Image (cartoon, rainbow, N blue to C red; front, side, top):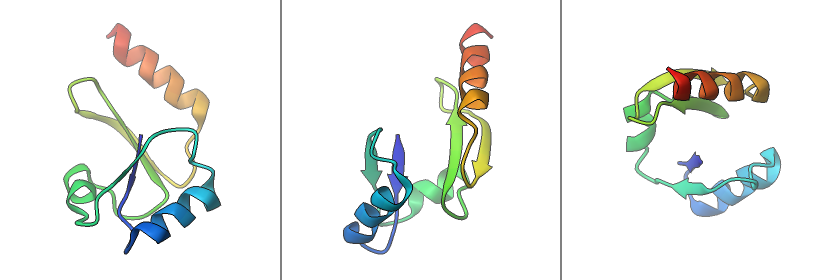
Length: 78
């Protein structure tokens, strides 16, 4: 899931087009409160959350898909 917080919804759509993030659900939060809550300070960024919402790790910039899949599998097993 992606979380858009750009200045306006048109900018959020442009971000999706620019970064190819159209393969997953994008949410919109013009208040930036969700970014503040999970510690995002720039974009693109990613945070991997456990099922209970606890952050596992995060990345600034592109994130390595193989690492994400491995961490997700470990989180489910753990």
